[in-house]
Length: 434
Image 1 (cartoon, rainbow, N blue to C red):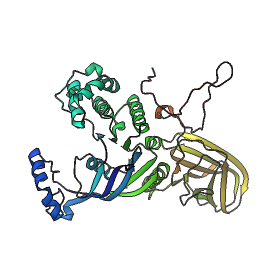
Image 2 (cartoon, rainbow, N blue to C red):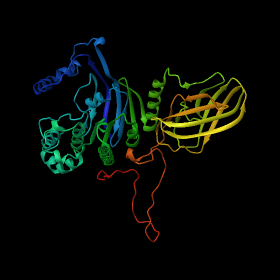
Image 3 (cartoon, one colour):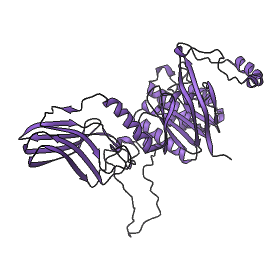
Image 4 (cartoon, rainbow, N blue to C red):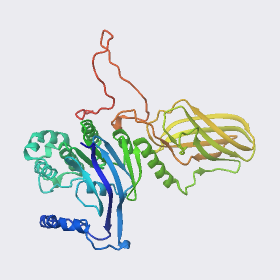
């Protein structure tokens, strides 16, 4: 038996601008089923054979091919409009590809949009049965898991209230609860964690971790790269409908962040208040393991270099650097005083034994003063990317800013270790902090 849960073979999807996607009624499905041999004989797919004008159409996906192994948690990242949701809609048979095909082995559970499949006039109780049946759950199966679904969603007080009175967050919780308890072989999740509160996100993360540990397959779409890093071992980066990069999570997310920051910094002056006396022109990591000298892939030792051009003699020199988060929170800083520096090109090299900061985007700031007067104040460009393995709490609100390796040992009163297994990062979804 093959270990491939999902096989995507040269899929492309074209949409016509201003034209509605065609959804078929039951009679259309039956008619197409009867004519399927004829269509296959002529080599046509289910889309309209009328050629669309290239000026009025665009390709949401272009020649996508990949395999997802059984039990994998695959992250799908990319900018808005990259084709992520379109690909999931093809996998769930909501829409069909223009060319190519997708094979999904096993029962599929999906949560692509908040409230998709819900009826606003029905109550939460009725929608649980209604949505569950749409996903393929039998009535007996829903009844057996009903209490667990309601407890997970946290909507027991409003269970008999029409869904139109629910907030978007409540609808999201109920939809995810039903989909997650389907116990599918394949679970497709699209940005659901962007809607819920922190407690709901913790439950979702724990549920997806439980699903993956049971050997089932998850495709997880999110713009929250910290969650991608924590949950996924492999990532596919979609860009303008094509696979730009696929591979281990840390490598792909690092390249994606670098591309985003490079685009944001393009054409922006990064030097503030510089003079002809001194100018910092470049920064990089020393002895970088790859061609990208601004991405850190280990916690240490770390060497950071700043190239400075000095045009006139300087006295009473003060030089400082600081590290700031993407939210401009000061993470660390240091400064040194020098008697003098003559004209020339210098490289200021800082050696750090360790830099245990959690993965993400950061920025170096370089300051150079002469006789207490600021000559150079540079927000270094490009940004500094840390792509180490997340070692903190799986729940983002408790992860903090440091990335510290740790082990837990438990001893009883006699000093011996009982037979207790501790697994770092596991989330118990029933825990509530008051």
